[in-house]
Amino acid sequence: MLVKLHFNWKDVPRALRFGFSLKKIWVQFLGLLLGTIGYSIFAYLALLVSGLSFKEIWNFWKFVPVPVGEPMNVGGIILFILGIIFFIVLNFFFGVAVSKITYEQLKGDDFYEVKEALKFAFKKGKAVIIAPISLIILAVFIIVGGIIVGLLGKIPWFGELVILLSSIPAFFASLFLIYIFFAFILSLFISAAVVATTESDTFDTLFEVFSTLNDENWRFIGYEALLGVVNFIGTSVFIWAIGRAIWIMHRIWAASWLMGDKYVAVEKGALYYMTYSPLFYKIEGWLDFLKVGGILSPVNVLPQMSIPQHILAFVLGILLYFVVFIAIAFPLVVFWVGNTLAYIVLVKKKDDIDLLAQEEKEEAAESLIKEQEEKSKEEEKGEKEEEG
Image (tube, rainbow, N blue to C red; front, side, top):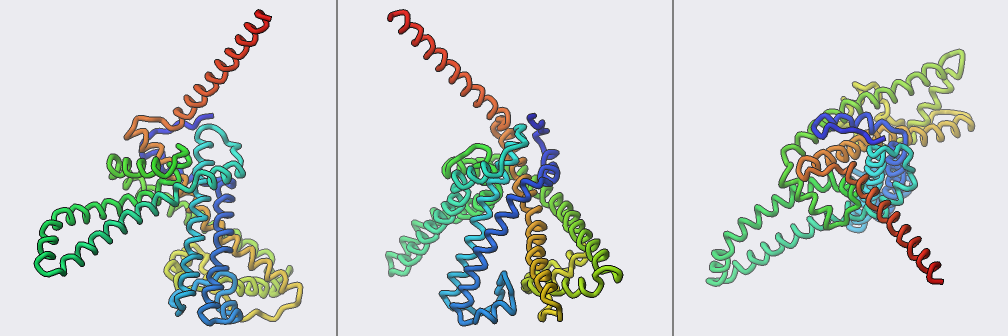
């Protein structure tokens, strides 16, 4: 059944309800998992190329190196940047899949398959990556043009004339650079929604980005601010609930009449496999408030345990990463869902087009065309039989 929208700011907070979906969280979880695996491979290679041994990397970062401030050579820096790009690009594709599932759900298809969403994302999602890259390339061309003019300005007499004639165009080019910057930021927010709802290519995606920037800029900013507040509150509650679930497990299994100290040792062993980075401490106060700050305190040495306990600690360490991915997946899902809702509302505002109803009209038109084609074929067949 088609979801009825208000087509105003009231639809944005509904991102929490539509985002709290096992299917969407699972899709984003897969993106984070695969992206982290790829990133970790690049990060390990970057650190190995930079002179660190595998043992040194493992002892400090375990599965996921986050080498903030770690000196690396040129090859290491390139590999590390490639790892980050791989992670970001892959998760943009999975963001398209989340947006597509959301769009189909809004149209009334609650059983739209994850497989179909991923197939759609990797087939049509290139525009989500190429659109912002196109804006970067355009900005680079303008900057290079400015540099060339500046170099010409060094030529005696002729240079002054060039600068004089170029000053006004250069001013407007600089203004256009600022405009491109805002378009680039906007493209990161709504490109996935544009592709998911309209199946657009790169040109159409860029057109929608500039159209939204020109016609609905302040409304977009307001919607994003509202979405940010809603997302922060919802994510805080979600992470707190995850922390309480782990606490309940601890209170039961670490009870003296059950596993007791054996389970406490296993917990410490699981934390041994968690990664470390000074970056994480920027959110330490928030996580402490949510009673999950212990995740930032990995142990440096494995406690004394039996072989079965070591195996259990290793498995729980892997599962702890999965829990972290789930905790990160939820706000990302709300982000994609919220921007899908926001884009549908903005299109209604600026173009007076209901993307949900528009799809129904297109499907009805397609079915009508098919019926007419079948009818004409039957008539032709009947005429041939009469002639025969």
